[in-house]
Image 1: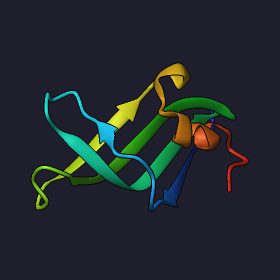
Image 2: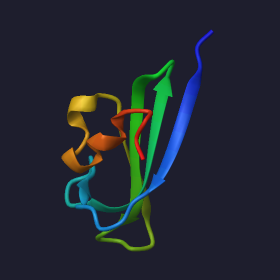
Image 3: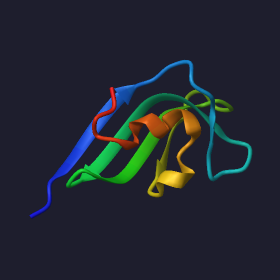
Image 4: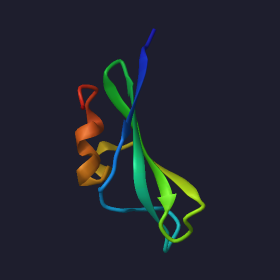
Length: 80
């Protein structure tokens, strides 16, 4: 039986993240990392849409190599 762990981290002052929608970027305020038996499964970055401030967007990454450089420190369950 596998164990899934989820970690939430507040973030601020980090670079904007592009979305899958052209012309839309996220101003991140939260990172959620999911691990299954200690192995990376998904990293989600969420925050306000920079172009439409009333809209919240979440971008999910399932491949570690696609995670933005500033967020790679959250790819380990030992992140602070």
